[in-house]
Image 1 (tube, rainbow, N blue to C red):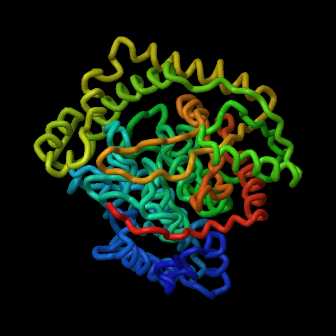
Image 2 (cartoon, one colour):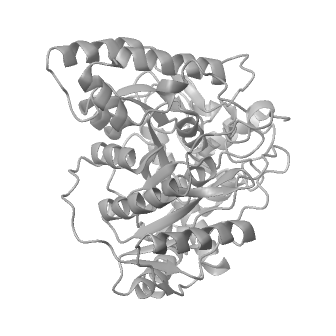
Length: 488
C-alpha cells in the first residue's frame, strides 16, 4: 500500500538532522513542519480516520504557536539549543503541561499534569512538544491477558507495517508514531522491553538508557530501579541527538572502536528471525565488523519469578507515592486504582482485568519479607552469572531482538511472543540497550539488540550506527507498508 497521506510524506520522513539542516538553509520552517505533521496525524489517527492507527493520545493545543515562536527566534539569531524548532512526541505516561499524562488509564483523566524534568530539558533545548502517544495501559504491568498497545483512554495501537499486527508494548504508540512519520523524535519508557520491543516491531531505532541517566521525575512509574525513558527515532543519529538532550550530556569525540561479542545463546526462538539475524551478522562481518561468539547464561523461570515479585513490590510503593503526590482529586494509591477500575468495569475491564494491580497490592510493597531477597538475587545473577562473565574484556553484546509483530488480539491478549532473554538480564541490571532494524521477515520488521555496560550509551550508538550502515547497504529503507485493515 502506498503512503496513506502522500501530501505530508515528503516532510514526514525527514530525520531531525535533515530538518535542522533545512531550518538553517531556510528551505523549511518549524511552522510548516508542525502544520504538515498535525495534518498527517489528523488524517491517520483522528476521529473517523480509515487508518485509525491510535498512536496518538493527545495533541498539544499550542504546538503551532510554539513553532511560530521558534521561527521568529531563529530569524533573530536566538537559538535555544540543539533541538530548536524540532517537534517531539512523548509517551503519555510522561507528564507535560497541557497533555493528559494518564498512562492510558481513565483513573487519571483530568488530573493536572506539569512538565516532567525530561520535558523541561527538551523545551530548554528548543524542542516543540507536539503531543503525546498512546501506550499499553499502566505501561503493561496490568494483566497477563491484556493486548500490548491497548489502553482504556486510547484504544489499540496499530502497526504501520500491517495494521492488524501489534505495535509492541508498552511504548507502542511511540514506536508506531516514529515509524508512521508523525514526528522525527519520540520519547518512550522501558522497564523490561518497552522500548526495545516497539522499536523492533515497528522497524525503528530505540535506546533504553542506563537507569537513572534520564530523569524519571514526572513519569508514571513501575520501578525506580528499572524504569528508564529514552528515544525512539528513525535513525541512530537522531537517537543520539535526542538522548543528548534528554540526559543533558555532550556526545564525546570519537573514541576507540567498541569490541563486540555475539551471544549465541540469546535467540528469539523464532526460526526465520534468528536466520535473518545470522545472515545479517555474516554480512556485517563482510563489511569489516569483528564479532566473535560466546555463550551467555539464559534468563529463565527462576529469574523471571524473582523479577516479577520485585517489580510488583516496587510498583505498589512507587506508583502509590506518585499518585499521592500528583495534584488534583482522584486516585492516590493502587488500592484506589483497583477500586476505581472495579467501579468502572464497563470501560476498564472491557477486554481484561487488572490482576497485576491486585498482586501488587497483596505484596504490601517493598516491606514484603521476600522483596529484598528476590531483587538482590536476580540482580546478582544478571551481573555475576550472566552479563559480566559473558562480556569478559569485550564491550557490547549483540543478539536478535524480537520476532515479527504478532496479530493483535483484544480477547486473548498477547500470544506467541519470541524474544532474546538478554533483554531481561539487562533490564534487571539497569544496563543500557539499543535496538536497530536489520530487515524483514514476511514483510514485517525485525531488529537486533546491543547491550553495554552502564553509561556506555554513546559507544552503543556508535556500534548501532555501524550496523545501521550495513542494513542500509543491504536494502533496508524503513518505509512502512501499511498492509491490511484492522479487522478488529
